[in-house]
Image (cartoon, rainbow over all chains, first blue to last red; front, side, top):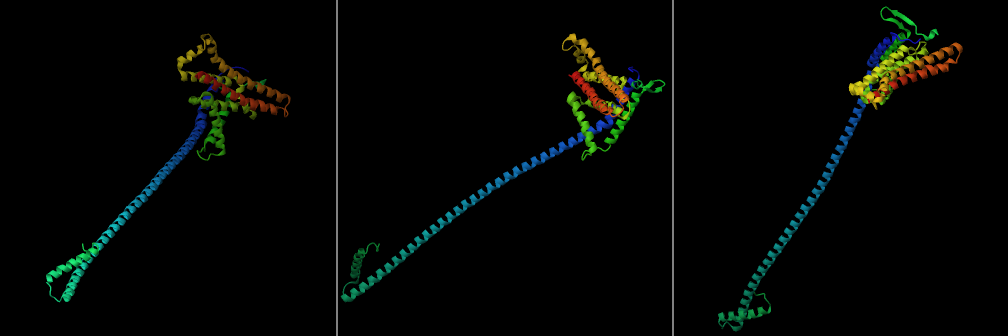
Length: 166
Length: 218
């Protein structure tokens, strides 16, 4: 019943052969398939992670760009407002200056006009006075002296009207 | 009594008698290899079928189990352990099909134990070198050296005898029961001895082999 014989050696050979066969036909293919699947899953996860990272990065970039655009637009509006104000001020000032100069020139014209008129009137009054005096005096007296006399008279009366004769 | 002996099936002129256990081993080998060829034929990476999933989970379980014991860096030994596990599991339960379990023959268990011994010592030498292997007998103290050297033989001997004794005892009990109470009663006993004990002994054999390897590789 209990005896050790050559069958021990046969069994060892059998087991070694079985080991080689099973390793080749069973364990290796199955392990390969499992490894491949693991690799596939790992790759899928990795690529998903990559895609997510890329999307996140892009979103950040877009946000930054949007922020920049907003600031830029604010800047542009600010600039426009500033330049518009400057233009407005400039135009206003110019208009004021022009108006001032126009008023000044109008005043000047009026003054010259009046002076001229006064001058003319003075001459006429002098003429009239001389004529009337001549009529009264009957033309006897010296014309030169009378003329001086009336000028004096007019000056005296003129001083009563203030500074118009100046 | 005649049943207990392993009959010599055929005689070869030079090599001598070939016993029943070796013939049954051949049958088991053929079945295992054919089954694996058939099952592995249509493996797919995506959308695996039910058969493939079952196969993968079994192999995956065995790989995880052995890698858990001997460590991931020594997974070169895993295919051998899986082979022995499969062989023992099939040969311990082949009594259900009417064959005599090969593990009931001392030659088979001795052969497996000798191979385990070789693998255990080889793994130690391969991992740590011959010098370390020689030195480790004298640890923790040199006094234990004779005992640790004896361990080389004792470990496979215990493996061999445990398997042989379990299988033989189960076989004897079952044959006696079948002789005296042929009706119904052998069924639960057969379940215990052929399936439970057979698978348990297969598990224990490879588990202890892996454990001794880990011990040796430390």
